[in-house]
Amino acid sequence: MKSKMYDAIRVGGGPAGRFGACFVKALGGEPLIIENSNLGGQCPKNRCAFENFIWEQASMAEMMRLFSGKSWYPNIDLSNISQWKAVEMYNNVGQKCADDAMDFQTEVQLKVDVVRGDGKIIDKNTVETNGKVYKGKALVISTGSRPTIPNIPGTSLPGVMTYVEHAEMRKDPKRLVVIGGGNVGIGKAGMFRAFGTEVIVLEKYKVMAEWDAELREFALNLIKTKGIKIVEGVDVKEIKGNGRVECVVAEVNGERVEYPCDAVMLSVGLTPNSEVAKPLGVKIGDHNEIVIDEGCRTSVSGVYAAGDVGGPPFLQSVSRKRGMVAAKNVMGLDAKMDYSFLPAHVYLAPLEATMVGLTEEEARKRTEIITIKMPTGPKPKEEIPPTEFRPGFGGLGLPAYGRMLTLNCMYYGRNLHGYLKAVIDVKTRKYLGFHHIGEGAKGGFQYLGYLLKTGFTVDQMAELNEIFLNPEHFIQATRLVAGYKDIEGLSRLSRG
Ligand SMILES: Cc1cc2nc3c(=O)[nH]c(=O)nc-3n(C[C@H](O)[C@H](O)[C@H](O)COP(=O)(O)OP(=O)(O)OC[C@H]3O[C@@H](n4cnc5c(N)ncnc54)[C@H](O)[C@@H]3O)c2cc1C
Image 1: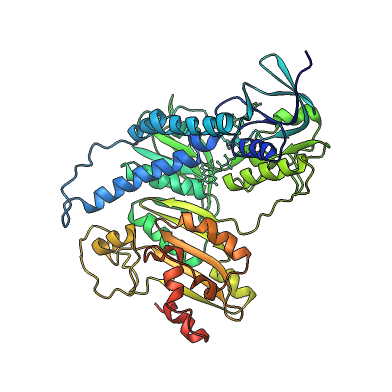
Image 2: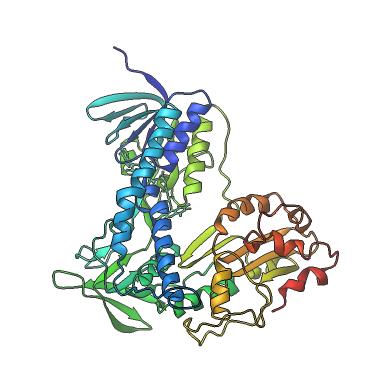
């Protein structure tokens, strides 16, 4: 019997593969997904969903610690908490929910064919799985990426982990060294710290370097008050231990320094899984990525690559969109990727930082700007740790609402109230960037990124309908001043 000819075979059913296949189906084509693990890829397994879940648990731990015995809150004993129990909860329930949802959406609702197994590419129209051959008019490689393992001795010692092993942990470490202070590394540091682990982050360059300077300062103060140590300009040389990790050896300012620990988190980036494509002779870049053009086409006609395997930016949204762009091109349309206005996000339990567009510093170099900032009360007193209960709003300019309002009521002036900044072009009244530390903003930032692209103005923002008086979506802060036709009026909320 002649085998079915698919319009596109997707090797890998993560965000890129799954969304791309569903898009082919929506455009009237017949896609096949070949997936060797779970539909949805690494996001629900050990990345986005897992990370968000653990941040949520870490935030709860932080808040219980902060509130215990204060105001109406009962005394809460946190001496015996463990992160691995939270990990176990995610593995037992969270991941299963995600798997069920992905399987149902893809196979039952959208009726996309899925084969479970390792896809071995034979040629650009043929993939073999479990001894069976599948044929497609086009091939889309969406095999994702894996953690980059630095080329130093000791990375295979027990106790050394990446985000993959984090999602499988069975014991809480006492002292953790995080190697790599990128968005993921900083997030991991906060998650472990909340559960009582001592944490040091070693970063080769500068942490949160691309962030708005004021937000970065706010974030670093917050991290410091939690007792997390960050060391910048560190060249890690070796991980040492006798049968198990015992310390990280590094060079700092020309000096050899040892950081004792019982666990290490490697968080130095991702390496695309392009090996599967090598038999096709597609062009591979310097960082193991499959080289793609704006339409996700590889150097071999009829072969596409989507998601992390095509190199950075390593984001779920980019992966899904690359999947969609490849799908459209497979189906004869002419689609292109647009990488502008991608939001960035860092977990800072119990808060989170989100940004999109230009920082204040970048914007000032290009044009005349003003900013809208909140809160506008006195600056946090960094030297006082967040242990003192000080109810009331004395001296408060504008409080941030949601979770920050509670934190604010309890700890105003202790760097827990959140921070908000919008950057605006004076002449055009268009927004250039949005920046936020707090909680609950990341949902809104997904839309704010798109609005920036459209040239959204303060006058248009003032026409939106807020459901609550929450400032994290910038409506309230803007509406207060949007009526002013002059810069002076607009900048009223900028004064600290
Ligand atoms: C810790 C962490 C947290 C993150 N959090 C976020 C976040 O909050 N938001 C965000 O936007 N991005 C986040 N990212 C990035 C995001 O997870 C990735 O960009 C996204 O998962 C990439 O999707 P993908 O489809 O390219 O690959 P993957 O999700 O890796 O899926 C690829 C799939 O292909 C399968 N596969 C590989 N080879 C084969 C083969 N030969 N045959 C069959 N199947 C195969 C794999 O098993 C896998 O299931 C995070 C990344 C990390 C490391």
